[in-house]
Length: 544
Image 1 (tube, rainbow, N blue to C red):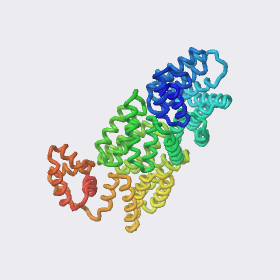
Image 2: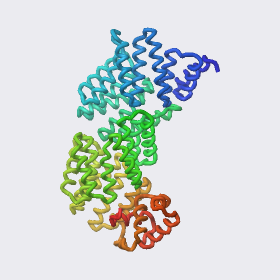
Image 3: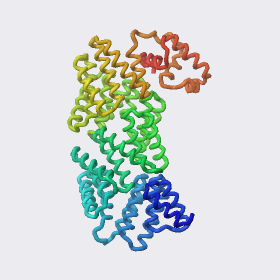
Image 4: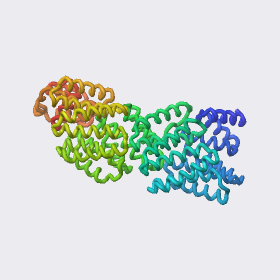
């Protein structure tokens, strides 16, 4: 195929947003004859959107050089901006800063132009990250004004979402969310480039999660998915966005997909320069391992999250709780809450503190944590936080022996979790409702609530919660663990930790057939018929 044919094919694919085809055709054309600036910019864009970051940076650099040589200062500055944009996404802050400074120098005495608005965006972001929220809002507002004056939809959308994130940090939740919605409307109306649209999608979702607006975050995540599916070859999410998507999928109960996204985020971060979000990716992996009863994997992922600067709480404390190390869990969550200063950070820790302190028998501390969570929920007017606060308050009442008072609060919590479509937490509340019904003598209702919770946990693969239900539903005390041999106790502990027969055999340096015999003996001696029931016995007798 001749160079003109390749160019025509690449341009046509670019227009259709068939990014892989556009990238391959334009790259082939570039190898036969140097591209003009417009085609270099198309190549740079297609390369970025298909995950070829180095090739994208090279194309933007050459486009900058050509435009600079031609004394097209605004065009050169715009190339430098998008080059810096890609470098920032990869965590290369120093190189990005150098190119942004170069863009400023290139503009020099250039009259007022839209490119000056683009260069206000990283300035606003820098102020935002430094805690100068008022300064950030001012920079984003000026950028939005230039975008509207020059009719540039990319600049308008990027600046608008920046204003929203800043407004939220200023405490104006409603105003901030309105700006985020405005940015998304601009994206969905068309005219915004895929480079800008992808950034806006991911940042808006992150902003919604920051204020616990799960429903809005879920809606925009679904919109992002549709947007990506409509563009063949698109590498849909960068690392930070993968982490946020994993959080949303976990909340929605799609744990398999959530684990895939978290794992992809880890791989993307590890493939490039170290970024702060690497720890968040490993933490998300750890949470999913913990929920599915994969304790060894969870512990390793929490450790890696800590290495990359992400405090492994409250997840690690909750892992210690389910492992029976209640004092360790209480100390860890207490320190984490004491260190947390922001409202968002504390609201993520307080539900775990309530649960752990109730297990430790410290009802006073649990009550204080539940009360603070309720105050935050009222201030932010977030349904998710209201659900968590009702759950915590109901659990405290139940622990204090007020089952009658706990029941309506817990039912309200269940309804709120249902409203924001978070099935796991809704099922956990049903376990508490079952305990309250049992305490009030309504055994039929208790059994039905446990059955409903069990069904959800089975769908999710929530192994530790299934173990807990098994223990709660046991009609009479099980046999004493003294009937088990020392080796059988070892096998039981590993089995309860979620390990397969093959993994147990490897740990104990015995054959898999021997493990099978030990498991069979354990079932017989404990009068149980499943690994879940055996694990419940181990947890109930603090053998883990």
